[in-house]
Length: 211
Image 1 (cartoon, rainbow, N blue to C red):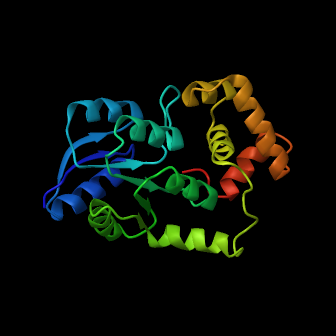
Image 2 (cartoon, rainbow, N blue to C red; image 1 turned 180 degrees about the vertical axis):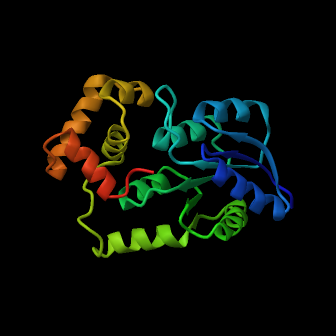
Image 3 (cartoon, rainbow, N blue to C red; image 1 turned 135 degrees about the vertical axis):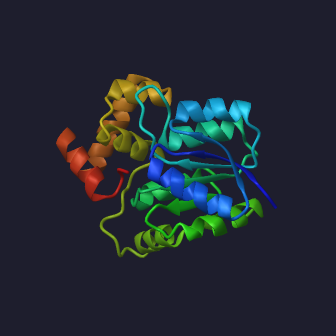
């Protein structure tokens, strides 16, 4: 069965590798987006069977991460979605699954896993790549570093702040008030014992929250 697939990623090498793999499997890449904004425009113009998207495509005025996934699911609730990511933080990975993504692939995995993920997801099942499974299992068994006691929203605020966005920019991107974002940031810092903005960046980098 030939699938019509829309691919979104801002890294040309990843795009080329994914395209080659999927076209070799007999599928058609009908369009490629390099940002979340262009992805939404493409989906309005190109009917497809599946969306494969990078988790993090930073842009000051466009959604990425959990906010992008949420936007896709609100606009196309029946569309199967596979997320590609370099993120290794178990809390972020679990949040991606909790929000309803059917496929989760870590970019450190062999790209051959993607073909299996596509088949699994199109059968209506969930596919989590081997590397992501290991990270989630280790976190559940307490083998990783201290688990992150943050809510999905707090996790997303910390990730976005560490990626270089200001509180105002995060509020605009997530469609929340500046006060709400500031509160979530402060509560997350208190939970994690972080004292300043540099600590946030160091924590996010150490915990694999940045792509």
